[in-house]
Figure 1 (cartoon, rainbow, N blue to C red):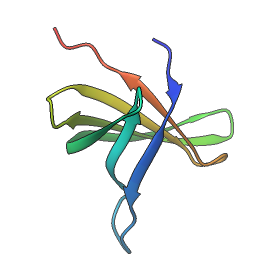
Figure 2: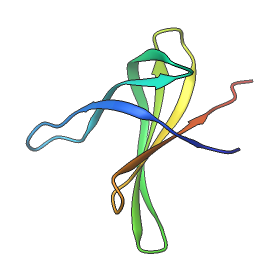
Figure 3: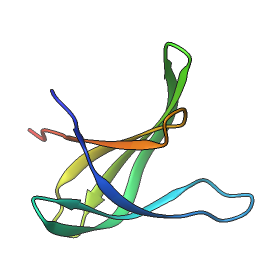
Figure 4: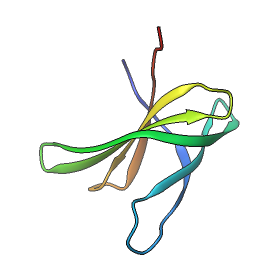
Length: 80
């Protein structure tokens, strides 16, 4: 599955994790209703933060933040 760069809005709060609020896909803003899972890993020296989120239309996505280059990637998820 191939990811794509994404424009995203997040909330940063002292002492709390980053909270994704919405992202744009195909020139449409998708509001995030909830984060269902969060984990960290690395690709080489780059720390990655993964967020599995559900949008207001109940679609499931994975958002990945690369801490090293400050970029976000979007991966649509299949639900079967």
